[in-house]
Image (tube, rainbow, N blue to C red; front, top):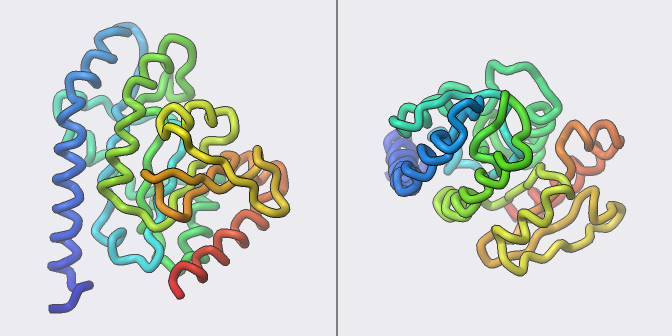
Length: 235
């Protein structure tokens, strides 16, 4: 049997998707309670992953973790329908080439992966008014942060990149107890660093958001560093 046959790819996807559905359904009441806590707020979400069938066949399975969406759907009563939003968006395939998606496409390429084949999650499972949640809203959303640990366990990435920036480092320390932030040559710890934790893959990193990488003229060096990691990993 060919490991990369369409049938085996679909089986892998279903297995992963079913695990994610189970994970999310365990928190369904938490999602609904958060919305009910702020009835007048525009909290879109939850943001639920559903990687496509090509993800598991890539030489360097890549998981990128952003901060939050800029608008999403609101199907808290039907989480499988909510996951279809992710599937239909398909990793920004028809979205404009924002810095986030532009750099992610470059990473897929230098890692030897096909386009639109990585997995994607966000630190915040809800956004507020199509933007960053703050104050009491983000405090409530943080109660869902441990879901990220379950997602990583299910999708089993080879390389994990947190585009969360240094301002969220304390939050990562809460999610991943005793996480280590390790300096990378030619970068400051705030710009780009390696992450070490038992619940993260060996090749895990935290960097500025792609827009900030570009504004700080760090994009080229960042992509080059990851390309070398990709070559090292597949050897």
